[in-house]
Image 1 (tube, helix red, strand yellow):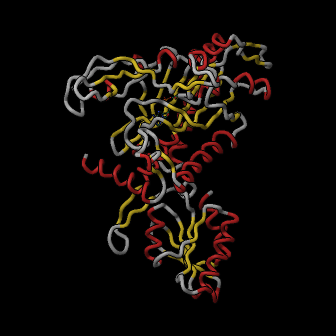
Image 2 (cartoon, protein in one colour):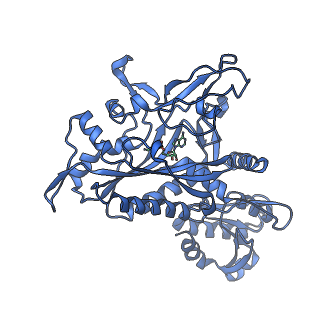
Image 3 (tube, helix red, strand yellow):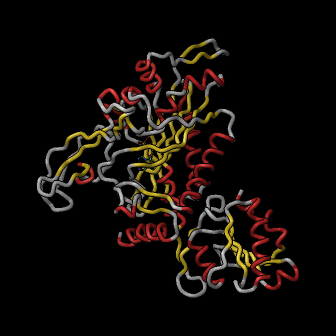
Amino acid sequence: MEKELGLLDKIVSLSKRRGFIYQGSEIYGGLGGTWDYGPLGVTLKNNIKNFWWKKFVDDREDMYGVDAAIIMNPAVWVSSGHVNTFTDPLVECVKCKRRFRADHISDGKPARPGDTGRSGGCPECGGKVGDPRQFNMMFKTSVGPVDDTSSVSYLRPETAGGIFTNFKNVVDTFHPKMPFGIAQIGKAFRNEITPKDFIFRSREFEQMEIEYFIKGEGWEAHFEDWRKSVLEFADEIGLDKDKVSELNVAKEDLAHYSKKTIDFEFEFPFGKKELYGLAYRTDHDLKSHMNGSGTDLTYFEESTGERFLPHVIEPSLGVDRTVLAILTSAYTEDTLGEGTRVFLKLKPKIAPVKAAVFPLMKNKPELVDKAREIYKSLKTKIPQVMFDDNGNVGKRYRRQDEIGTPFCITVDFQTLEDNTVTLRDRDSGKQERILATELNDLILNKIT
Ligand code: GAP
């Protein structure tokens, strides 16, 4: 337990030190449950999102992407059930007045929206806590210049809402054949009572969601396809297979409209917790939005002449939890050369820096010029390349290892004679001499 807690501290510290993730609004003392991604963090996150988008949208014929507004007509969240039931049980300590999620201080089980929760003593001062009351997690805002109840709206608590509201638009403009999916990546906001565990539970985060529309019958096969695809994605981006597991949500815990839900869990440094969700939600969502909006959302299938309300399978993936699971999987310590080395064993396609180019010595203009020439040529093909001439080469290797750069290229005096460079592999630390003209293809090959 001690060791595992240490790992989270190490990841948080590396993230800040090397520009992956900073505390939100840090110079003002921060804002609870918010995090800012720095230069390396935003690139890592973009690599994850781009890989997801390519795999699930660009490389398929049955997927349509959308980018819907974050602030939606509040009626959307009435139909989806969020206004009435997207609540967590909140308790307040009578002594120190701190507030907690009731289920976080009782048996430790995560709550599902609508739980009443059971409460133990205050985790801060041991005082008595009051009875739980339901706290809605949506962030309220007002739209337009008049701040009254008629202008109330919400920051979306999930991206799914903007997918369902565009179902008819996509059908009308593209006439997709069943089955097909609509995908969206974007921010979601939840006023979590106790944001915690670094970026695991925050108040502003990103989701990658798909609503895959099917005819009700035969849903089991689609569900199984998506189950495999989610696991495949996790493996392809470099999540440690041994840390990923599936939890079949028990029948009695399922929402009334869901026939099957799997939580994909990950062994985070603070324990096994939900990473992603996969749910068969029947035709509940389109039915609710059809009733709420008064717009016909049925689908007409030309080949069979049938008109029906599609059902959905929903794979819902959190971007930030993916980042944390990747960092947990990749963080490695070994003893290469002198002392302990810390490195991130990131998959090359996900790593924020694919290769770093060094001149052996900073004070030899001919080496610096040659290194810059190689760096510029690489950068036209592979944008995530870095030039580094700070400190000695050994230190540069350590710095690149720590941010997960898979390849380091050193330009030395031999380069000036035969145009060869040393190419160092992050994981083994081994170096080989190769022609500078072969670098582009070799690195491209490893990252695609
Ligand atoms: N549309 C379904 C939906 O939103 P969810 O289980 O509430 O389902 C899906 O959320 C995913 O979003 C989670 O599996 C997790 O990866 C991510 N997520 C949810 N709440 C989060 C939070 N407070 N901070 C970071 N990620 C979160």
